[in-house]
Image (cartoon, rainbow, N blue to C red):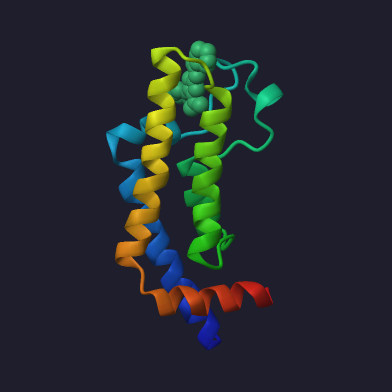
Length: 130
Ligand SMILES: CC(=O)c1nc(NC(=O)[C@H]2CNCCN2)sc1-c1cc(O)cc(O)c1
């Protein structure tokens, strides 16, 4: 197990904790599971790359993230998808856009507070090499 692999294991432990905290916040309930394509039948006509917190947890376990930036790119994707699928001036669309922006800001804030910036820079160097 190279030194790099110990760093990536530490990253996975950290990202699982971030994912758990976000998924356990009732405000982000709509983003915890893949959009139900039986219910939302036109979803894939509009959203080309669905993403959700359960899928992200699986990606952590499958070693798909080599730095926190890659993890936050998927959080930003969840948010962008919700903004794109819910553009209307209705209160329901406005509410889900608000929840999506809140998820994005909470995720970035959690990582900025809890993650050592030098550690992330080391992970980004590893990510570049892989
Ligand atoms: C996550 C998401 O983007 C989402 N958007 C919705 N939009 C609408 O229903 C709007 C779209 N504009 C017209 C009026 N209806 S419902 C919905 C959703 C909510 C859940 O509790 C679970 C789930 O899988 C998906």
